[in-house]
Amino acid sequence: MSFINVLNFHTRRVVEERNSCIAEQSAMKARQEADRLDFKKQTAKSVCQKERERQEKAENWKHARINAMKERQIKHDEMENSYEEAAQEYKASREVRESYTPPLW
Image (cartoon, rainbow, N blue to C red; front, side, top):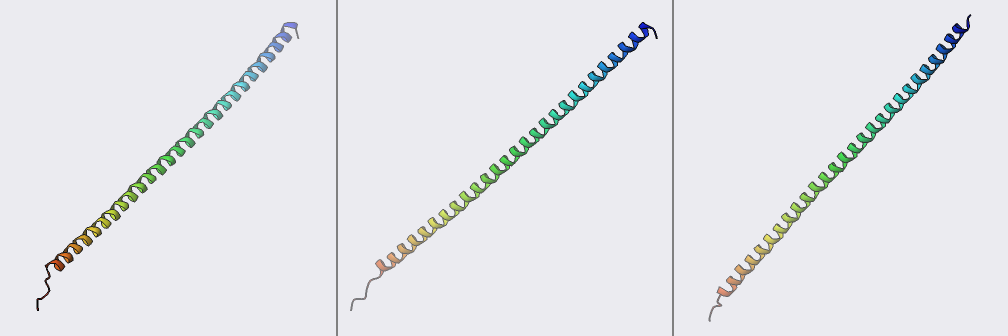
């Protein structure tokens, strides 16, 4: 083998090794980027899920508060009506007592 052939062989081998090394580095970077994007995607998914749960919880709380307020209003109205009925009954019984005149014997 001549010196030029050896030099060409050696140069080709060095270039092939370098190309192989570059290809491995590119593949590793691509895997790292894919992993990073997957992690980012999972994180975003987790954040969205937590936000959905937070909104659902807030919505449930809001409806529970509205229902509790309605219940309190109903009880208040019932109590107010019972006071009005009691006042009317008292007024009616008072009118009956005032209109009653005992017999004069």
